[in-house]
Image (cartoon, rainbow, N blue to C red; front, side, top):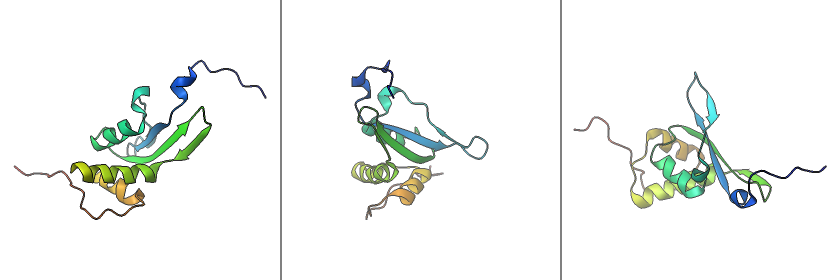
Amino acid sequence: MRSSPSIVPAERLDRDIYLVLEDFGARAGCAWRETDEADTDLDIILQNLLSGQYAYPVRIVSFNPVEAWSRDATSDIADALAQRAADIDAEISSALQDFIAANATKRFDMQLALPLRGVT
């Protein structure tokens, strides 16, 4: 079976791309977040998760169209998030801490910082 040529230049596709499945609650359910092409690399995804761009991440997938592979990257992202949060002493939401606790494969001995609520 012949495949038709892509209208997207190959150099834009020959990289690892990450997408986040987010839970928007009982009324809206889960959806893959619409994301700018420039914001789909690993470092940007980690930055966006830590900064609260994704409130309730459920799953993260990675794929490379040119190399023809895809995989569930959720555990790798959870490990990387926990490490980065510990390295920079970042405050993270309780939802993101739950995501890390549910998906991380590495044990982190330091406590991740949660934002303080109601402190004046």
